[in-house]
Length: 312
Ligand SMILES: C[S@@+](CC[C@H](N)C(=O)[O-])C[C@H]1O[C@@H](n2cnc3c(N)ncnc32)[C@H](O)[C@@H]1O
Image (cartoon, rainbow, N blue to C red; front, side, top):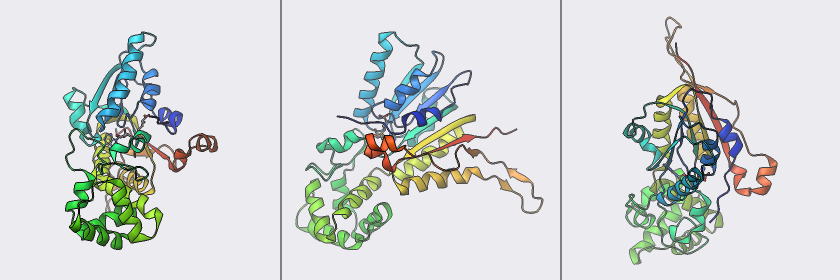
């Protein structure tokens, strides 16, 4: 099981460690590669919070980090590990008596281990149960249930909206007809139906992506979490987000844009609500040629960084 973290230095550099007390969240700790670099820069009076929706990934990261802490080689901040969606950010922090943060990072999409473990059902390249849940502990609905019970029209909309799939209509129709005869329970069964209906091998990738996004309600969780992060952030605190897909990047850009503009009174021309966020980089940061060469998965990554404006 292997996951190479993407834009590692750039994401860690997005954080400002110069506060009297740093309170930093890694909202997608995964296997902890980014988190480890962050933790090493923190002091013992700081607080680090690592969140992941996947309890298995979270446990691996926590075990690794706790082992390093026990080695006594480093000065460590207080580390808190939480199994949850980052959509519950405010609630999670308040349960831990934390009411503001100085920085937060997100490294979105799926970790390589999700694709590598056939039994998670994320990949159509191996046969496995049609599962696709990030959170197998508390998210009840699986991808095979979504495929079984979602009306044909809604399936079409999911494939269009989250996969930008041109053959969405034919694929939804084929699924609706096949499931009347027998349940679609495995990744290979679904892949075969998609290929048969679309004659396009790329459709399988797009439809699998769309089902995963819809099932885990990924985009709603991103918006909810970013809005809470903006509220919780102290002045000059930063948010760094790595996305891997143009739909995801657009969502982040649009969410930040809502807070980058203040509200101006049309009559007086006075600012009534000041802008809360400032872009740190005009354009998103992309991986270098070297990084893409050593880790081809990084080629579609984009990092956006914003900071919270101080309001007087
Ligand atoms: C690309 S990986 C992160 C890798 C991590 N930065 C590292 O260095 O190992 C994305 C992680 O985000 C998690 N994730 C996805 N959606 C989430 C959500 N709504 N809340 C919390 N974690 C989520 C996934 O379970 C996965 O472990």
